[in-house]
Image 1 (cartoon, rainbow, N blue to C red):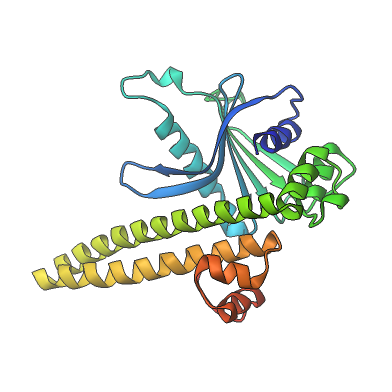
Image 2: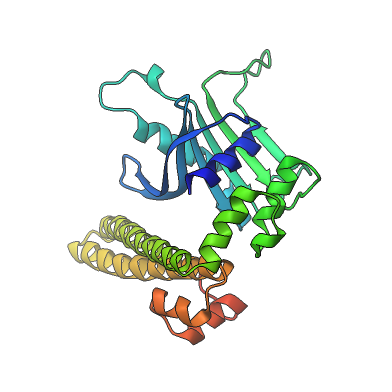
Length: 278
């Protein structure tokens, strides 16, 4: 819901009057080589500034180079053909991480490009922010991070967030909406996994064909890479969606039905018994 995104950005950015005019959830961006990345949330405020908000449970999903890649994807996809580079909007990539990914003991980190010789800001208007959600101090940001870890709406400080959680978890309409959104997320993840599998398969086929000097190498490489890439992409997508659904406290049986796997498979993923690459 846009009001929730607006509240989260107001707290993280420290701007009480920030207004989100539009947002897209699970936005699929592609680079020039065709590799895609699905960004959790892309929002635009009343001043035209762009925000990419990512919630990452694993530190490897919030590496500095991934933040850099996200910023580059947003820049690449925002300008229309022929527009001057000066039209690039100010951009903020925000990673909210389960642990202190950068490891310096701070509740929030603001990363900017600076000129080494004089320490001045480079003023490219590209910003990266890391929020350490394990830090839950008695501040507005700390209370927001507390709310992020609450399973019950009654435990939350924010009326905006608690109201949304209450709607999703305690009303039939909300549960159905949540299931629809998660199903769409699952389908997008499957498509992304298949696309990456095809790309990797083609690259593998060409490499093997060149090394062996035979056309058969290309064909076999493509087929093998495409098959393995597609299967791995689908496994990754399904497992990610299972975790997302479990965090929202959906029953295991309902999760299995939506993801189209067995109840036993869901239980194994959630208990960590299945060694499936993420």
